[in-house]
Image (cartoon, rainbow, N blue to C red; front, side):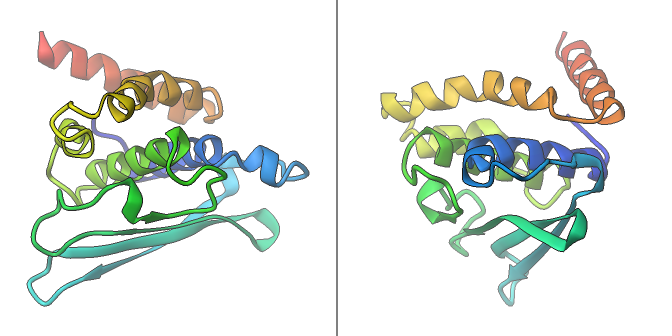
Length: 172
């Protein structure tokens, strides 16, 4: 699914907001997806391989929210997983950490930083689909992501729906 960078950032914000349970951590924060901006950084090795993707969102009034850092093994872009993700998640190794990881990987795919399909990352973190606990969480990710759509501004929501329809047509 190809999205504009702005819509990809807004979807990442919505996914991380839900997966990191920011509403519980900062209940007074009113999430303003349209006016919250991603500030991020990429670190590469001397061959150009991605080593680190880190960032945070800056909400109106300069409030910094949802900081994250995801490291990669420089051997290959697939060599990363939920345990290499640092966030403010309330449950570090559970469902929320996996949802945060998948949301970040999906964003990197959408902006062209990673060329490997999301399904390959799911296969890796579930150890070839043998880790049934992680596999069940990964199977819930599309429904989790769909609920994040409800937080998006109208234009981004419509773009996502259009991109999904385009993907369905292309697959047929």
